[in-house]
Image 1 (cartoon, helix red, strand yellow):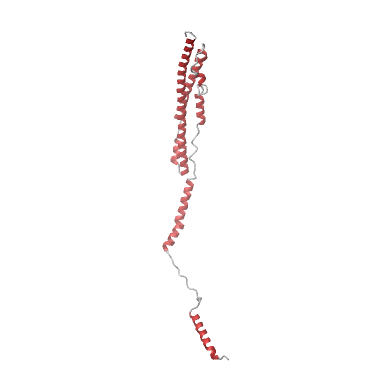
Image 2 (image 1 turned 180 degrees about the vertical axis):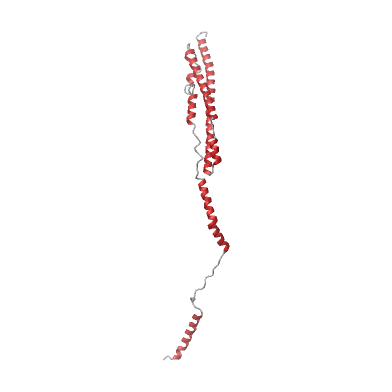
Length: 222
Protein backbone atom coordinates (compact mmCIF):
# COMPACT_ATOMS: atom_id res chain seq x y z
CA UNK A 1 0.00 0.00 0.00
CA UNK A 2 1.39 3.41 -1.02
CA UNK A 3 1.97 6.02 1.60
CA UNK A 4 2.39 9.73 1.50
CA UNK A 5 6.11 9.25 1.71
CA UNK A 6 6.07 7.45 -1.66
CA UNK A 7 4.96 10.69 -3.48
CA UNK A 8 7.72 12.89 -2.05
CA UNK A 9 10.36 12.09 -4.74
CA UNK A 10 7.84 12.72 -7.57
CA UNK A 11 6.73 16.01 -6.09
CA UNK A 12 10.28 17.11 -5.73
CA UNK A 13 11.05 16.29 -9.36
CA UNK A 14 7.99 18.17 -10.57
CA UNK A 15 8.97 21.14 -8.47
CA UNK A 16 12.45 21.22 -10.05
CA UNK A 17 11.03 21.00 -13.60
CA UNK A 18 8.52 23.77 -12.89
CA UNK A 19 11.24 26.02 -11.50
CA UNK A 20 13.35 25.41 -14.59
CA UNK A 21 10.49 26.28 -16.89
CA UNK A 22 9.80 29.46 -14.98
CA UNK A 23 13.45 30.45 -15.12
CA UNK A 24 13.85 29.75 -18.91
CA UNK A 25 10.51 30.30 -20.69
CA UNK A 26 10.18 29.01 -24.23
CA UNK A 27 8.29 32.10 -25.41
CA UNK A 28 9.18 35.54 -24.10
CA UNK A 29 6.52 37.14 -22.01
CA UNK A 30 6.87 40.46 -23.83
CA UNK A 31 8.05 41.53 -27.28
CA UNK A 32 11.48 43.09 -27.58
CA UNK A 33 11.71 46.64 -29.03
CA UNK A 34 12.89 46.99 -32.74
CA UNK A 35 16.25 48.67 -33.28
CA UNK A 36 15.94 51.66 -35.73
CA UNK A 37 18.95 52.01 -38.13
CA UNK A 38 19.49 55.06 -40.38
CA UNK A 39 21.92 55.53 -43.32
CA UNK A 40 21.96 59.23 -44.37
CA UNK A 41 24.15 58.77 -47.54
CA UNK A 42 21.87 56.06 -48.92
CA UNK A 43 18.76 58.04 -48.10
CA UNK A 44 20.21 61.17 -49.73
CA UNK A 45 21.16 59.21 -52.87
CA UNK A 46 17.70 57.69 -53.09
CA UNK A 47 16.05 61.06 -52.74
CA UNK A 48 18.35 62.53 -55.43
CA UNK A 49 17.47 59.67 -57.80
CA UNK A 50 13.76 60.27 -57.31
CA UNK A 51 13.75 64.06 -57.49
CA UNK A 52 16.67 64.97 -59.75
CA UNK A 53 18.21 62.14 -61.74
CA UNK A 54 15.11 60.24 -62.84
CA UNK A 55 13.25 63.35 -64.11
CA UNK A 56 16.42 64.41 -65.93
CA UNK A 57 16.79 61.00 -67.57
CA UNK A 58 13.14 61.01 -68.61
CA UNK A 59 13.49 64.50 -70.10
CA UNK A 60 16.61 63.47 -72.02
CA UNK A 61 14.94 60.33 -73.34
CA UNK A 62 11.94 62.37 -74.46
CA UNK A 63 14.18 64.88 -76.26
CA UNK A 64 16.04 62.05 -78.01
CA UNK A 65 12.83 60.33 -79.08
CA UNK A 66 11.48 63.62 -80.43
CA UNK A 67 14.71 64.35 -82.32
CA UNK A 68 14.76 61.01 -84.14
CA UNK A 69 11.07 61.12 -85.08
CA UNK A 70 10.72 64.77 -86.15
CA UNK A 71 11.20 65.13 -89.90
CA UNK A 72 10.82 68.07 -92.26
CA UNK A 73 14.11 67.86 -94.15
CA UNK A 74 12.80 66.14 -97.27
CA UNK A 75 10.72 67.11 -100.28
CA UNK A 76 13.33 69.14 -102.18
CA UNK A 77 14.34 66.45 -104.70
CA UNK A 78 12.46 66.40 -107.98
CA UNK A 79 13.06 63.45 -110.38
CA UNK A 80 14.44 64.39 -113.81
CA UNK A 81 13.17 61.32 -115.66
CA UNK A 82 10.81 63.24 -117.93
CA UNK A 83 13.38 65.87 -118.77
CA UNK A 84 16.03 63.28 -119.69
CA UNK A 85 13.48 61.44 -121.83
CA UNK A 86 12.65 64.63 -123.73
CA UNK A 87 16.34 65.30 -124.38
CA UNK A 88 16.82 61.76 -125.71
CA UNK A 89 13.80 62.12 -127.97
CA UNK A 90 15.31 65.28 -129.44
CA UNK A 91 18.75 63.75 -129.87
CA UNK A 92 17.61 60.61 -131.67
CA UNK A 93 15.18 62.32 -134.01
CA UNK A 94 17.85 62.23 -136.76
CA UNK A 95 20.33 59.38 -136.99
CA UNK A 96 19.78 56.68 -134.37
CA UNK A 97 20.61 53.04 -133.70
CA UNK A 98 17.46 51.83 -135.45
CA UNK A 99 18.05 53.64 -138.79
CA UNK A 100 21.86 53.77 -138.78
CA UNK A 101 22.29 50.86 -141.19
CA UNK A 102 19.71 52.34 -143.57
CA UNK A 103 21.52 55.65 -143.75
CA UNK A 104 25.00 54.11 -143.83
CA UNK A 105 24.83 50.83 -145.80
CA UNK A 106 28.59 50.87 -146.43
CA UNK A 107 29.98 49.13 -149.50
CA UNK A 108 27.01 49.73 -151.79
CA UNK A 109 27.35 51.48 -155.13
CA UNK A 110 25.53 54.76 -155.53
CA UNK A 111 22.57 54.85 -157.92
CA UNK A 112 22.50 57.36 -160.78
CA UNK A 113 20.07 59.60 -158.93
CA UNK A 114 22.02 59.48 -155.68
CA UNK A 115 21.95 63.22 -155.26
CA UNK A 116 18.20 63.36 -154.84
CA UNK A 117 17.58 59.98 -153.27
CA UNK A 118 20.60 59.73 -150.97
CA UNK A 119 22.78 62.82 -150.64
CA UNK A 120 20.10 65.39 -149.85
CA UNK A 121 18.08 63.26 -147.35
CA UNK A 122 21.27 62.06 -145.65
CA UNK A 123 22.54 65.60 -145.31
CA UNK A 124 19.29 66.63 -143.69
CA UNK A 125 19.37 63.67 -141.30
CA UNK A 126 22.97 64.43 -140.31
CA UNK A 127 22.24 68.09 -139.74
CA UNK A 128 19.22 67.13 -137.66
CA UNK A 129 21.37 64.93 -135.44
CA UNK A 130 24.07 67.56 -135.00
CA UNK A 131 21.54 70.32 -134.42
CA UNK A 132 19.65 68.30 -131.81
CA UNK A 133 22.91 67.45 -130.03
CA UNK A 134 23.59 71.16 -129.79
CA UNK A 135 20.03 71.72 -128.54
CA UNK A 136 20.55 69.11 -125.80
CA UNK A 137 23.75 70.78 -124.65
CA UNK A 138 22.09 74.19 -124.68
CA UNK A 139 19.08 72.91 -122.75
CA UNK A 140 21.27 71.34 -120.08
CA UNK A 141 23.32 74.53 -119.86
CA UNK A 142 20.12 76.47 -119.21
CA UNK A 143 19.02 73.96 -116.58
CA UNK A 144 22.41 74.19 -114.90
CA UNK A 145 22.24 77.98 -114.79
CA UNK A 146 18.85 77.80 -113.12
CA UNK A 147 19.81 75.30 -110.42
CA UNK A 148 19.39 76.55 -106.88
CA UNK A 149 20.37 74.31 -103.98
CA UNK A 150 20.00 76.97 -101.29
CA UNK A 151 16.80 75.38 -99.96
CA UNK A 152 18.65 72.20 -99.04
CA UNK A 153 21.46 74.20 -97.46
CA UNK A 154 18.98 76.27 -95.43
CA UNK A 155 17.15 73.21 -94.15
CA UNK A 156 20.42 71.52 -93.20
CA UNK A 157 21.68 74.63 -91.39
CA UNK A 158 18.45 75.19 -89.48
CA UNK A 159 17.78 71.53 -88.65
CA UNK A 160 17.00 71.05 -84.95
CA UNK A 161 16.25 67.32 -85.10
CA UNK A 162 18.45 64.40 -86.06
CA UNK A 163 15.90 62.97 -88.51
CA UNK A 164 15.47 66.35 -90.16
CA UNK A 165 19.23 66.69 -90.68
CA UNK A 166 19.45 63.15 -92.09
CA UNK A 167 16.65 63.87 -94.53
CA UNK A 168 18.35 67.09 -95.68
CA UNK A 169 21.57 65.16 -96.24
CA UNK A 170 19.66 62.57 -98.26
CA UNK A 171 18.24 65.35 -100.42
CA UNK A 172 21.78 66.60 -101.08
CA UNK A 173 22.90 63.09 -102.04
CA UNK A 174 19.97 62.74 -104.43
CA UNK A 175 20.88 66.03 -106.04
CA UNK A 176 24.42 64.75 -106.60
CA UNK A 177 23.01 61.58 -108.18
CA UNK A 178 20.85 63.72 -110.45
CA UNK A 179 23.89 65.66 -111.65
CA UNK A 180 25.52 62.34 -112.55
CA UNK A 181 22.42 61.51 -114.62
CA UNK A 182 22.78 64.78 -116.53
CA UNK A 183 26.44 64.02 -117.15
CA UNK A 184 25.61 60.55 -118.46
CA UNK A 185 23.07 62.05 -120.84
CA UNK A 186 25.68 64.48 -122.17
CA UNK A 187 28.13 61.62 -122.65
CA UNK A 188 25.44 59.77 -124.63
CA UNK A 189 24.98 62.91 -126.73
CA UNK A 190 28.69 63.14 -127.44
CA UNK A 191 28.89 59.46 -128.39
CA UNK A 192 25.92 59.90 -130.72
CA UNK A 193 27.57 62.81 -132.51
CA UNK A 194 30.93 61.07 -132.82
CA UNK A 195 29.41 57.80 -134.00
CA UNK A 196 27.22 59.57 -136.55
CA UNK A 197 30.10 61.64 -137.86
CA UNK A 198 32.40 58.60 -138.15
CA UNK A 199 29.64 56.58 -139.80
CA UNK A 200 28.96 59.33 -142.35
CA UNK A 201 32.64 59.71 -143.26
CA UNK A 202 33.30 56.00 -143.63
CA UNK A 203 30.04 55.41 -145.50
CA UNK A 204 30.85 58.19 -147.97
CA UNK A 205 34.24 56.71 -148.82
CA UNK A 206 32.89 53.19 -149.00
CA UNK A 207 30.06 54.08 -151.35
CA UNK A 208 32.31 56.10 -153.63
CA UNK A 209 34.77 53.24 -153.87
CA UNK A 210 31.98 50.74 -154.41
CA UNK A 211 30.61 52.91 -157.20
CA UNK A 212 34.07 53.25 -158.80
CA UNK A 213 34.61 49.49 -158.56
CA UNK A 214 31.26 48.76 -160.17
CA UNK A 215 31.93 51.25 -162.99
CA UNK A 216 35.40 49.75 -163.60
CA UNK A 217 34.00 46.21 -163.71
CA UNK A 218 31.39 47.29 -166.22
CA UNK A 219 33.92 49.19 -168.30
CA UNK A 220 32.21 52.47 -167.60
CA UNK A 221 34.30 55.56 -166.89
CA UNK A 222 32.57 57.48 -164.12
